Length: 620
Image 1 (tube, rainbow, N blue to C red):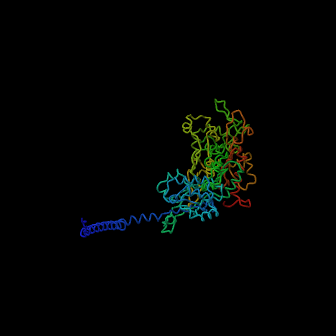
Image 2 (image 1 turned 180 degrees about the vertical axis):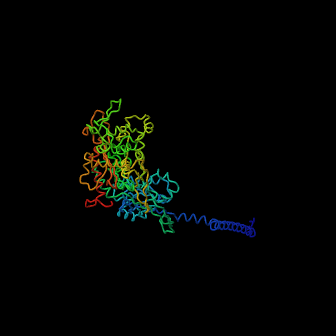
Image 3 (image 1 turned 90 degrees about the vertical axis):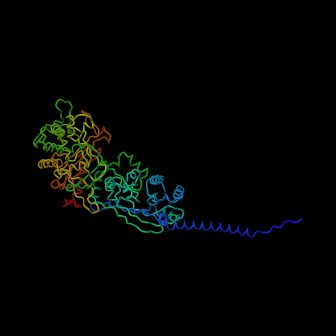
């Protein structure tokens, strides 16, 4: 049996090989063609798009915050400056593990829970991608060294020098200049797109005082720089930049030395002092005591410090000269008296019998004079102001009526904001029929007019309003708007006339003469402060009740707690012949306007009007 022999089919194998080769060649050509098309698409059709995307990965726009404008007093003394401080910041988008990074950073630098909370708050806020969020301000040299050694382990962590606001005088101008603080969520949510752009790279904003009211001028304009970074986000080089525009500097009417003297004159009492330049309306001193160190708020106040300030019974955060509303007491009597002359209700010779009390017809209620036995049988205009005779003003208030009193007093700024260049001013209360009907739902009674005439009842005024009122008297009826800022960026701010009081010049002179009798008269309530004075002055004392005293009871200081005793007030101006400074003083619970507040006025006047040798300056 023979086996069949099989021979190779070379022709068939050649065809199969050719078919496979052809197929492979076609596949290769197709793949090569696709690759060429893809290369063409990337390199030609979408070249610009991918270049842009590549640039976005390596090129970033970084904002350059502007330098905040400086604030000077009238003599060029720096009151608010910017100091270099090293800041630890984190770019969240470049950090692989934020929790781990924060934990590691806590081993290198001192990071408090307050720092972490504020960092997380800012991280949640609307912000630009790749914006650095500050974690710690004011790094020490030792902390900087630790961070530098561990730099290779800290992706997304940056340390850079930053200008931080600093107030050299600490608490001296905290209520007037105010302070800046970190931008919070509420402020950020209220930003327009333009404001959001302006605050790029800036972490602070004016919170109170001039820092807030002049925020736009102080802020400046942001700059930018395009930088190239590596894969870790480190800056390799700056491609181009646009310089920021610094904020405008402010020069104030405030005088540092006078401010210090006014604060010292309060001798630790709670109170306020406001001094105004009669000729310009510029505020020379504005003290609210006690105060606080504004620097505590700049980079974020600690919970402990804020709780201590906020819970203090002395209310150091409360701006007494701007927001404190107190019964002005007898300090408004010159205005009421001049109103009586203006409306022909009285003449300078009109007299009133003062037995120590006043009664309305048909009423058994006694409206008592501060002087229990009265001021005599014939009290005239000048004596009534010099000795602060309540009965004279009860009678005048009844005969003048609230409508005339309200109209005349309103011209001196009572019951309205002064529109000073500070935020959050309060307007006080200068009552009227309409006011009482709206506020109390009650009609106006004759007894209400008696209380208004002596600055009690519903009457409330801020120390700033009283200073503006007495400055208007010193300026013979011209009411200038109080201003703290004298110039912005070197451009002077001119005085602003808010009111020219509709009153005769002769009436104003009689009022001024009567106020001079308060200080220089034989029986003036503040005659003691004139001892040894090198100039003449005019003034009016006031005492404001804190708690009501029963009709038949007497005021007993010893029976009241210290914080329930009367407030002491004094207003005045000097020199009498050519007034240069007007002043309002408030001492909480100090009881006597002439005994406690008047000496403060004399001390401030001396500081402004006299030279180092105790002689009168030619031009303060």
